[in-house]
Image 1 (tube, rainbow over the protein chains, first blue to last red):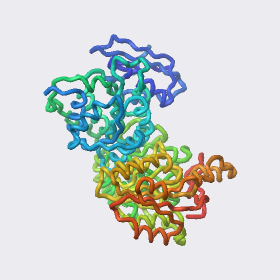
Image 2: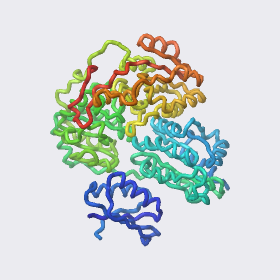
Image 3: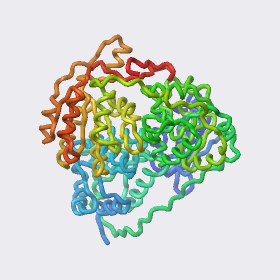
Image 4: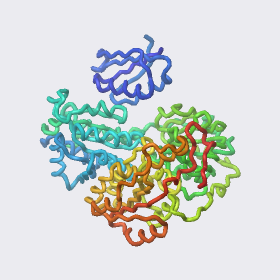
Length: 77
Length: 551
């Protein structure tokens, strides 16, 4: 399983948009975590995907395009 | 200067160069409509009968002019009525800014009258959507909305504005709103890219031009590139007109209802260069067999299109114009397509019976080559794409991705308002036309000289065709609909309506009634069994076309 971490503005709409877009593109979620301890009053959003979904990098590129997302990376939990 | 939020929003629109908007007023946007009234000399508002048509009109305006289309609606049902229009624009990457009124902040979450969470509803059908939280945020939010809508791969943006924000006031100076300087990303250099050698080795290359060519305004570069190297050009539905169809290198449309010659030549290509193509299932047929013997080069501005439906051998991310310019000197001396014979694509000429092909030819003869053609969705749409022959990129406006029946009349209204000096032809089937026929009222109200041509086969023709071919002619809910007299319907809106059933009558009526100054509705009675050919049956490859009897 692979985990994506997005540094984003601390707004529920941003999290909703990310999860909705990923769901629409067929990704399956194992775990979603949001915390407000990111720099510049932002938030971290960690999403761990189930393995039988689309290619991981598609998720990264999708999230990178969302307004109010500052950066996206893969992390090891 | 101290202004309220409604006037600030108007100033933001003016600062973006907006002089035309489409919409429908309601409780949550009364302050905004009050400001619009006071600025009516600078911004012309056009009211449709239904919010869906307002968004289609803004979409048609954007498609025809290349500018951002703007829609304004109220909260609740006003907002939900926009959803089909927004999704239509999203699927075809059209730049819209939709401004929705919302109930006042203190009422949000209380199930107030006409309250819906429209940003949640439109999360996956907008390029971006957001609710304005405070008046101070409004100017920057509006500027960002336009920037997002038109930048990169365009798309619709929805801005939800609570009513209290329209009414609150603050000091505002429009001069403080400076658009950010464009920071267009530079494409990487491809001088040493292996795709150059792959192209040079090719003897049977084909270009596929998609809607992205239009968005990138790359038609001229495509034309120069294709003609210099003698590369045949096929197009998707959304790429219609990006390469002139009267040129010998134009193959026509590919896909489920593409031209047979285009599908065949593409399937035999040894190299395919795609430009702004998203490889819809309607374009590629069975994915595993699509151009299976060709080296595939995919150019797109949206990297999410790479490896989505087709796995290409090479990807070029970025601006099409720049890549074409880079490629041109690198291919110097290359011979392009060897032994290409445009004569082979000529279809057999049919006797001039009252079929779609001849109706369209007759209409085109009357309106001229430059007319903007807007369609609904169905058989008439495919016939138009096949037989009209578009030569310029903003000439054919159609709902390609979402396939929205009811799109056409609203979009034609927007196109005619955006291009008042052009002839706008709205081609519809009877089923699609009935979906938003009430917008004839808008056509009449604004005296828009739109020519509407209804292909009336008294059925839902495309579904009926599929039922005939794939359901043993069990015509479930598609047949026998003769309940509307379209001539009388047009007359009810003060529009001349004509019914014809022969090419001779159509010519006579066009000569007598079509004068480019008044709207006109022509109902063409066609046979229920007239079908769209070729058709690639679902799940089949492009080479498994059923060409019917018309090719």
